[in-house]
Length: 329
Image (tube, rainbow, N blue to C red; front, top):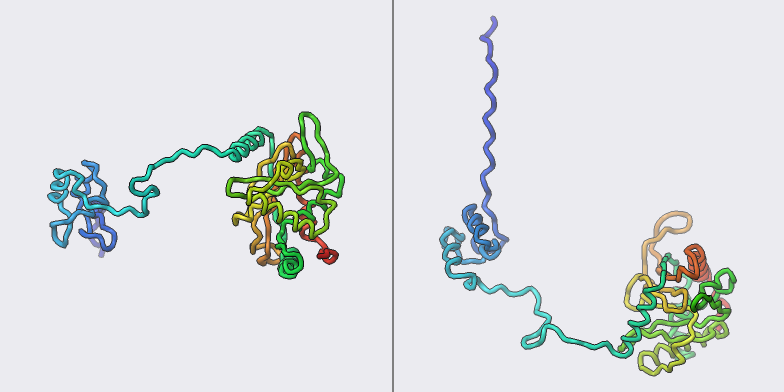
């Protein structure tokens, strides 16, 4: 038996739009939630919802009603409860919000030199250095070095040795030079400038002809320059004649940075903080090794990027493969 035929199904009733949900307050906020009407009134009058939520409500459960909002609006926003700032103001009560500080003589000199540097077409590069060998050697010898010589064993003389090793290759001589006018003065000696942070600002004393110094003389010389720089006891000759500069970003904890040239020098090196970082291990795998970011900026008028990159790579190779067994102290 065939049942009665079925007519076309009636179209489904259109879905009702979801009802506006009241805005709920943050946990622990008086009032619990705001009705759509209260939200609309707050929007019309430009009253922040956070302010509305902070009002004492007279509705059920302490909710803020439209009447509460109207009462607040008529009384003026000055009736809003005081809101405690998240932080203390930078300026205390009675203190000026700004103060003028004329640049010191040293800061003016620094500004002038940086302006000269910024006008130079310079480029930068950086690479990672495996510092396992040097870090282990320094850790094993720093105590004995201080006992014998009364000086700290920093990484600076080790970096200087690596730079010297790279400069023994004449192919890198153009990076240890000064550009004066249209003439590049290539130095077959190394007057290494060391950027030192002092209470007055950054200064760059120079340790002269370090290629003729022993390791202990290097360490003592750099420590002496730094101490005299911080004490304000440098002489004019101490800051002249540099052929290459080394700046230590790691002293501030920074992993690296882009150094600005110290004209008329044509290259500057930057050493970042040495610390444990994930790195690929020889033969495969990943491990945590003491690493350092070595950066360099160079005057593109005197050298091209490939020449600068080869010089930086030579320094890295010297740092990673340095034989310290012959270092006497």
